[in-house]
Amino acid sequence: MTAPNPNSPVFELRVAITTPDYERLVKFYCEGLGIEPAAVWNNGQGQALVLNLGKATLEIFDEAQAETIDQIEAERRLSGQVRFALQVPDVKAAMERLLSHGATLIHPPILTPWGDTNVRFQDPDGMQITLFQPANNEGDGN
Image (cartoon, rainbow, N blue to C red; front, side, top):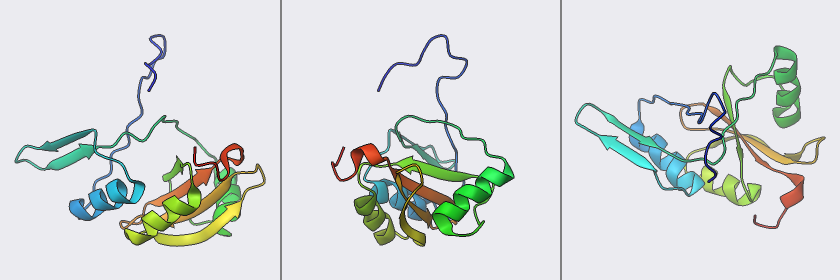
């Protein structure tokens, strides 16, 4: 991982999810994505963990763009105010892992107009997740 740009006003984006079933969601994201926690807190006042998910960006859509993306990925407007989009090296393998760990498939993989392969899910708490594999790494496992 590269060091943050010291001239950037923001060094890292973290998204915090609160869930009524901590163990279920930890298993879903850790085993479903195949990653180990970077930090774990269990101090008697609750539990939390941090997962490093690579480079973070924040996308801000207006309603028309959200409608466009939902139509492409799910054939209808259905995502809420927040949706995760995770780039993975192999959409089909990641899809199978997440389905085996409690994901709900919203729409099977599609080829987007810009050439990426995308698939839409909900996690066990209902958070919408798009997995995407850019066209430039189709099937190469990188």
